[in-house]
Image 1 (cartoon, rainbow, N blue to C red):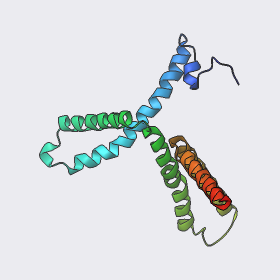
Image 2 (cartoon, helix red, strand yellow; image 1 turned 90 degrees about the vertical axis):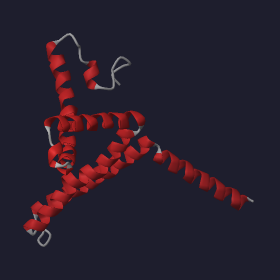
Image 3 (tube, rainbow, N blue to C red; image 1 turned 120 degrees about the vertical axis):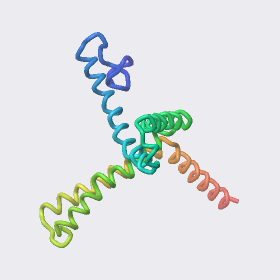
Image 4 (cartoon, one colour; image 1 turned 180 degrees about the vertical axis):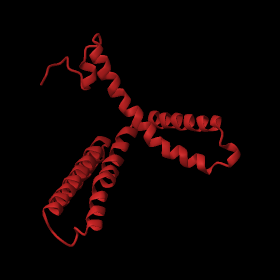
Length: 168
């Protein structure tokens, strides 16, 4: 739509000579780095809390967190579909944990599950949207992995086989 010279990532289309573009690029890079740290922190804390008291030194903590980082990089390099698999897990779990469960808990705590009103209607609409987003995200992830293509091939194969049996 925008021509052959347009890159798929927005940041690759920015001119690198301007300061504002560099700020935009670095700002986009900070997000995933911060998210990774936020995700790994509870894992590292859980492992560190299981260590005996005499192993809880600053050097051991740094080594453990570095080991977690290196192991994540190795998993991402060894399994080429790791990102797509994480998208699948994210589509299923993120929507459930961040939207559906809080809405259900709010309805239960506020007593909204017993009385219907405008607020409950909005929450139900939010939950329906969340479920549809989760289903679409799961479908797209499964399609990227190739599961949908394999299922379509299997269905067409079984249909062709059924048609051949009826023709014989």
